[in-house]
Image (cartoon, rainbow, N blue to C red; front, side, top):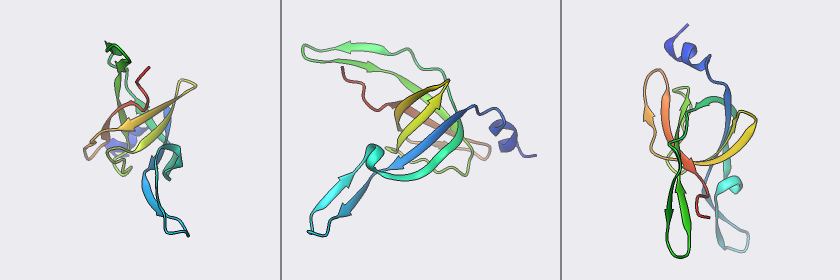
Length: 120
């Protein structure tokens, strides 16, 4: 059993990963597909989502923004890229998140993530 197998045994969450892409329609029009409309890269992969950073509230006259971030841990062979759209099942709830630049290690990947929609 490898170190990545031992760590993966602790992963209790599931992630589905979507990657944005550009599609050319038969009419010749280019359409950018992102979010859940993007290409599904991984479905229902084991992962572990860390505790959030607290959700600091920043307000302006017209909007309120909550900057909440997490770390997502996956097996090293899972290739999550910056700006991938993630749907994470954590403790029975679905969270829609966007990936930052991953830190890749031989035993696991550490992917910083934030909420996909954080403007209220």
